[in-house]
Image (cartoon, rainbow, N blue to C red; front, side, top):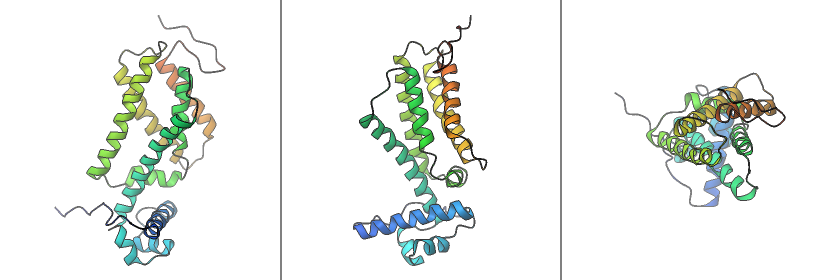
Length: 219
């Protein structure tokens, strides 16, 4: 079998000028992939958009697979940073519904930059071991956080907290990716409200989203 192309950047800039060049290449890659698709998004096109020589691009990234993998990694890191920033700067919710709204707001907000690029990242990004490891680590951290959250609120009524946390993490990621990346635009506020309602009715069936009357518990 042919060797898989390398996905790691070739060098990390040590000076501000080099870092600015690298960021310009990544920005150009995101724009080109979103505009013409991954197959047509050649490194020549990306170098031209970034206003660098093809040789300069290859100093940083060996191929376009490495560029797309870096964009995915940056997307994941941005989501983690958004959560940290929210915890450090905003008053934390004191109700379970508030916690769910916070989760939905952060996840949806992290997927609004470029829906077309989002689709490319999660349908065509190369699955390198390092990238898969990063995705798995982020997923495990989110599951652990939700598991603790569910245990703090008595209105959460699920038979298996661990399974519920896994279902919510995977559902919100898959649904948000699919809906936000769809060619037909959606009303983000309505979409967010429906997600909140869906999760509340699954996790806390006796509670009701804001503005709704509580439903009687089953049985």
